[in-house]
Image (cartoon, rainbow, N blue to C red; front, side, top):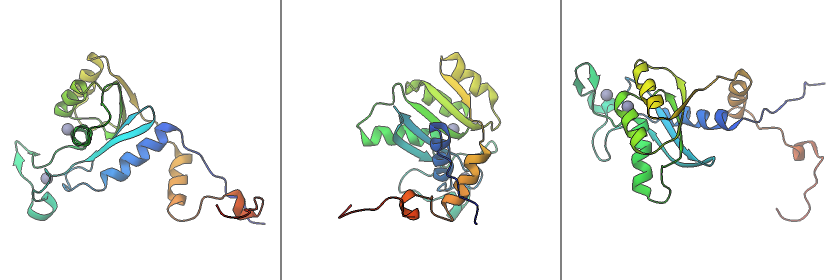
Length: 178
Ligand SMILES: [Zn+2]
Ligand SMILES: [Zn+2]
């Protein structure tokens, strides 16, 4: 008998960090694929990846715009998430939580503070740890995301096979229309 496929249901942190990683893949500068999700009361209010300002060419197409060893062509994912919330109107960023694949750089750190974000969940430390200290100094809760092998394995399966559902086993009989 085949081993039963167990489904791992993600925690909120697992869930939003996985989304941040997928968002990062849309980046247009290959020097770093960063991604951020802005969440309020466990609902996504905006997302962002590293990309050129709308309408301008991408690093991937025309090369980088280097200043002091940094590419400055793109708006960072964390900054883009805050800007997207502004563009969309709707929900204030005050009191929100930001999930980011890497810790925000010093510039994005300032924007995070100014946007009233109250918690930042960081996937990995990328260079500037003093920026993390600045977040803490501003009273923002900073949590390092703990990679979860069980969830990471589940993510791989989600993209290659169906999540087992009771109806697949014939235990739930749907009657009439859904
Ligand atoms: Zn670039
Ligand atoms: Zn940044």
